[in-house]
Image (cartoon, rainbow, N blue to C red; front, side, top):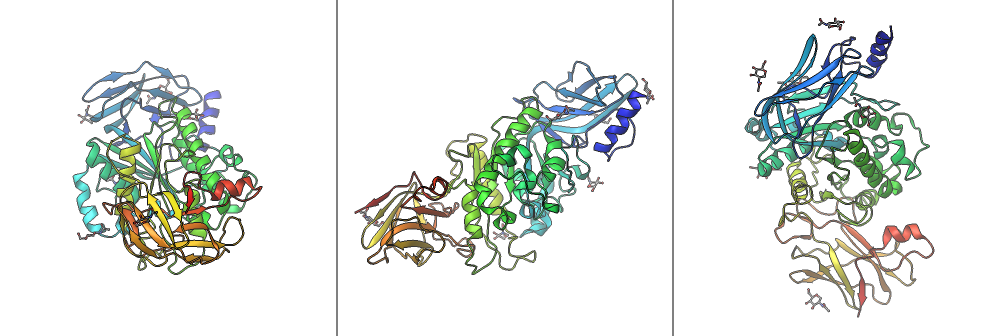
Length: 511
Ligand SMILES: *[C@@H]1O[C@H](CO)[C@@H](O)[C@H](O)[C@H]1NC(C)=O
Ligand SMILES: *[C@@H]1O[C@H](CO)[C@@H](O)[C@H](O)[C@H]1NC(C)=O
Ligand SMILES: *[C@@H]1O[C@H](CO)[C@@H](O)[C@H](O)[C@H]1NC(C)=O
Ligand SMILES: *[C@@H]1O[C@H](CO)[C@@H](O)[C@H](O)[C@H]1NC(C)=O
Ligand SMILES: *[C@@H]1O[C@H](CO)[C@@H](O)[C@H](O)[C@H]1NC(C)=O
Ligand SMILES: *[C@@H]1O[C@H](CO)[C@@H](O)[C@H](O)[C@H]1NC(C)=O
């Protein structure tokens, strides 16, 4: 009787499977999958008859047999010994009278791909989609998996449904995330071992739905319940079930929805979500997934040409916890792909969905190589100012690297002020044309006349430049300078504003 009750209870959380207690793997373990390679150990789990002893056998380039584990509450769980990159393997779970087998399994690195519609954006929708799809068969060791779009009011143990099972490209690639796929295939080119891509994302969603109650509490966001935007519902159904799988890292393309929803909280809520995912994946995998696993993200691209709204500039800034670049002191082991120079006015999916995902993914890959794989000599950060020098007639910016400069009349702006207060969106901002350039510097003209330069900002617009035509790039022209806002005066008596708006590490100097 007890066993039957457990099986029924368990069907409620894993409704995709037959309503029985047969031996099987959890929903996201399947044929053609990639399991995390050494030095980490892959975790596998599944279901079986209560009390049965489950033994796992690995057969392929090497063999492994695990010590038997007991099925408790309908579930078993095994941690393999470390396996080097490669394959193919068969993974067989066995009880006394039945077995379940996963075939054509590879060991490599698993990357989780999350966010909203620009991560969901399908490979068939990008520029040069047919070329990309034709190329895919050359990458049989980059495997894809996609979770179905499902919500839950409680934290689930397994996915409710699988949208696309583990597939060998080009199978099922047309509907798979373009950014996720391209990231995986570019990484494969440098790593030369299998990559497993797990897509779990949903268009139009704010960060709050992907965050646990724990993470939301860090930012005072726990109370709101607003229908489909219910906090934590996608964390519960689409992330929590994955915690037991060992992963290498995650990439994320999200923030558009927060441009108009809890925007001012994003510099707290986004880093808090990253911290919480890291803690939870580490714990869920029994310590196999790193407690500080690398986390890459795409800084928002563009939405509306000619818009004067500062919603996108603010979110871009908050995506970096108001530092302007990543990694930074608040967001360690992160990397960011700047995308504000990749607008697409003709996108049939709306201008908020630019079709050039190749450059986005390539820039992410550079960050992953440097931050996740510790490759020396891989540049992944666009130019950021070191010092700002102000005189009556000019403002000189010195960058942290050599720059490639295209003249611009108004992409830099200065705030002219007679009061020693921080500048906000309503302050008097005037264009600061680029007058001259040096190898690592630009000279802007100071048009504040008799008032003082109180702040400087760069590309502080929804749509600041045309395609790959922003004023400042790395000397190779591959990496655009990220946008910034730097205030001279901290807000008086307002610690929070002070944190938000003052770049402690970019001094203003005055001649
Ligand atoms: C895996 O199982 C399949 C089907 O049973 C078999 O053809 C294949 O040889 C096995 N591969 C390995 C590596 O054991
Ligand atoms: C395996 O054995 C269990 C009892 O231990 C029984 O309930 C189940 O039906 C058997 N399954 C098969 C496939 O024979
Ligand atoms: C593609 O996904 C579908 C489910 O949507 C699945 O039935 C099919 O087997 C997959 N194709 C391949 C070749 O894996
Ligand atoms: C998976 O991880 C969750 C969260 O750590 C844990 O509660 C659950 O028991 C794990 N599932 C299995 C089958 O080990
Ligand atoms: C599409 O292909 C053309 C021709 O090869 C190339 O010039 C262009 O850069 C590609 N676009 C993207 C976004 O990769
Ligand atoms: C300001 O920048 C210009 C052009 O980059 C450079 O020639 C000049 O020396 C700089 N001035 C100072 C005081 O650094």
